[in-house]
Length: 107
Image (cartoon, rainbow, N blue to C red; front, top):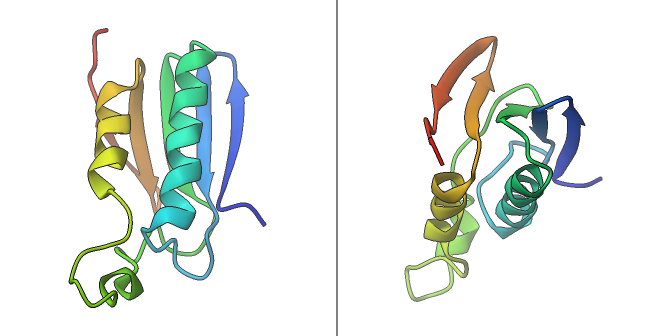
């Protein structure tokens, strides 16, 4: 199963996180998430809805990433934040029925 699914309806792109068991934040989830954001921009979506297909939105960082002996993850979490910041569309995250609008980007 893919870590995310992507669908577009009109000008709304929907990215659903399905990285079992808890949508832990790490490269297995972040790389397809970034690809989904880039796809939404390239398909001229006006908005992106980020949601979870699991019971919980996300349990946070995958702590196994910090067990490399150096105390830093093996991926660049800032790249994920940049992807959200530089997407050309507005986005919001949906967690247990509540939506948080963000990214009021006017580009």
